[in-house]
Figure 1 (tube, rainbow, N blue to C red):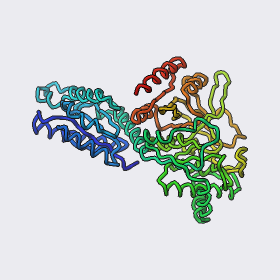
Figure 2 (figure 1 turned 90 degrees about the horizontal axis):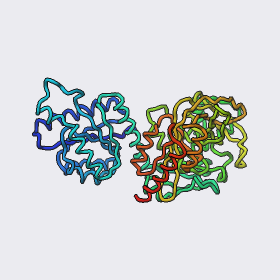
Figure 3 (figure 1 turned 180 degrees about the horizontal axis):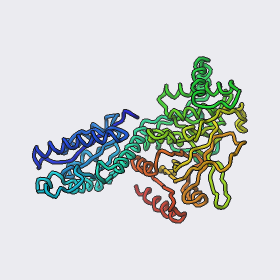
Figure 4 (figure 1 turned 30 degrees about the vertical axis):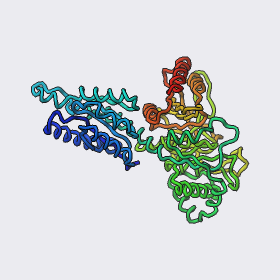
Amino acid sequence: MKKMEFWFVVGSQFLYGPEVLDTVAARAAEMAETLSKVLPYPLVYKVTAKTNQEIANVVKEANYDGSCAGIITWCHTFSPSKMWINGFANLQKPYCHFATQYNREIPNEEIDMDFMNLNQAAHGDREHGFIAARLRMSRKVIAGYWQDGDVQKRIGDWMKAAVGVAVSKELKVMRFGDNMREVAVTEGDKVEVQAKLGWQVNTWPVGDLVAVMDAVTEEEIDKLMETYRASYDFATGDMETVRYQAREEIAMKKMMDAEGCMAFSNTFQDLHGMKQLPGLASQHLMAQGYGYGGEGDWKVSAMTAIMKAMGEGGNGASAFMEDYTYHLVKGQEYSLGAHMLEVCPSVAAGRPRIEVHPLGIGGREDPARLVFEGKEGDAIVVSLVDMGGRLRLICQDIHCVKPILPMPNLPVARVMWQAEPSLTTGVECWITAGGAHHTVLSYDVTAEQMKDWANMMDIEFVHITKDTTVESLENDLFLADLAWKLK
């Protein structure tokens, strides 16, 4: 993702003469260079567009350039909007309209008609914005002075969402076997998802994985064990069990890398030929940026990979998660998130421990896994569900806390949180919206970024906040259902 960049396309016209156009180009290049020093990805000045053909050409170039994750436009002067139609009609990359101006203040002594003709972004951005509205384009409008930190952060956040789109369009998911039997929410239309989001979701037999595992050498396992020792504390003397997890990890990584996959799923109901359900193996793969989904949940697997990429440069804290059980003491209502084994150590508050315990499900040997408590802080949980005919992305604001109980006999990674607007109302809203039991929990990615991503992907977005009520959500879902049926 470090190779991605964004293109800065500035609007003007020939009416003002070459001197003005030279000034616009020089300022645009200066702004792009300055912003590139503070934004998470480079902003590359491409052209001061003055004709329909120039705009069409730069859009065509952007569409076919794999390093271009989106375009940011701005109109330094007036830019007649009809000449943007052909380009915008063909644009396939995320688009942000940056409404700003080069100068912060109106210069009392200098301002005259020449100054007004050159510095009329207030005029040009409105004309430019109309045509995007007329074409019903998905876009992000950000207004403010280009050197202000809060404005730069909003652009950076949008960039990360756009990178999530780039990842999505090329994402491949490797399913080791099918999903858990009789589970509804892990199902979905893979053909529609590929057409809409770009994901290639396919299955590889577990027997193929076992064959690759058998070919893993002891030297390869020794090397990975050293990585484990550098990253985690060993709270077990059962090295053979840990080494078996290393064997599983090496084999899964080899298979995914060979196919260009950045996400995977498995289920304890399909472990033919395997001695253990991958626990530590899955957790350490997630720590490297791979997405994961338990019980064959390929949708949450893909979303984990995408949100990890969107959060790049943060603290790496996006993880496969599941609401497991509640604490319903009045005034102390919390949700405890965990899974059988597979929670990414990026969300750990301290150094994780490798432990070996019985699983109690699946009928296999006791697996090694990482055990830890999650970080404190504001976060979101996100669920993508197939509503039959459309996809819905559900996002809830939460606040993670240090677990209020030590839970010494719970041998899994765990995160405890307070849900907005409250535990019970939040649960009612989540269930009303059809949210899955599997989610992605992220401290790095914001609800606004997930909304931007959903808009770019043209899917429904539902946000449960401190102000959400069941009644308001039911009304919003009803109206959204009507609107999406008309699309």
